[in-house]
Amino acid sequence: MTVVGFCSILAQEDNLGDVVIRQEMLHVLRECCDEVVVFAGGAGRSYRASYDLDGTTVVTRPSRFQARLLRAVVGRERPLLVFAPGPARLDGRPRALLKSLVNLANVVLVRLGRGEALTLGRAVRGDSRAGRFVESASVRLQSLYVARDEVTRGILGPRVRVGPDLALARDDGPSSPGGAKDAMVLSFRGDRPVDDALVRDALEAARRTGTRPVLVTQVRRDGAQHARLAQVHGIDHVAWAGDHREQLARVTRAMLSARVVVSDRLHALLLGARNGAVVVPVSTPTSDKLSTTLAVLPTREPPGDVGALLAPLGDPVAVDRRAARAAVEEVRALVVARAEGLKGGS
Image 1 (cartoon, rainbow, N blue to C red):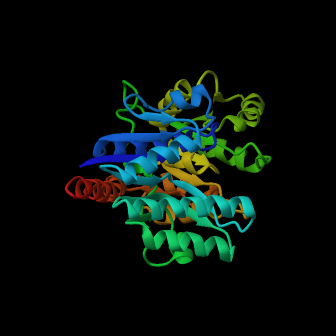
Image 2: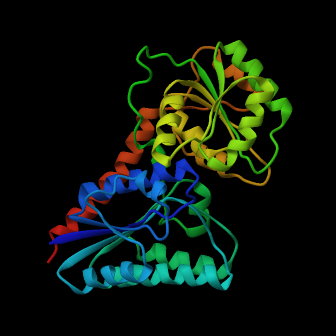
């Protein structure tokens, strides 16, 4: 029996963290499906090129995605519908609720076609009763619903499985040719001013830990503030220059050299953690995203006196990468097993 995977790569196009976790989703689908249908919508050429889409079926119109899904349901194929990782709001407004209902209808359609529906790495927030009702109904019909924090399970119930963010599925290989991890990566949101005292404390911590501070832009819209900070403090800046693929390569090189990452961007922290950096989350009172995502990760003690030296910046976290990868691997194995079950079906 032919298994056809269905997913979407639509996300914030200027955020490389969204690219990385969707790359991991696609990696799993490529492994276990005979064909992968990818909805790209109106995504720009640079964003689409950041994914390895060769060999997949890329569609840009919702109607064509739906038509291909329907063909898999009614034909001699088995659909495997995967909802992409990332945040999701339970919103009672008509447009948002309609989108949730369409997703639920697709889950029902897939199940009627003897397929499977899965969600990987969601973080659900919101207090809409209607939105919660629709998403909870979807959870009950899905074969696997993985969240990246316990808050989501608290909202949607015990059928939700909690595991590490997909960014921790792998590292990016060896560091620099000399293997040096001598950088303190700083990466801050550009939609609010950075606390000057925090930057001064970070530069002092870099001096004490013997690391070189460098600002890294993994979300394009953060670049202007990073450029200003780099000029004011006389430090290096990995600016966004060129296309998505080139910038991801630059960010990856920076993270491979990072001993420490200080950031209020979740995936700046996780891209550092997956390559062995100690991470210091800069939390904000308006969001629990950093603390709740990091709370489910297996950790170890920071090496040497690094933890004490970083304490003035926040609570340093050293992720146990082997344990985190093993937890993500368990989820991957479950997805593969579901696909194998579909292939053996009649």
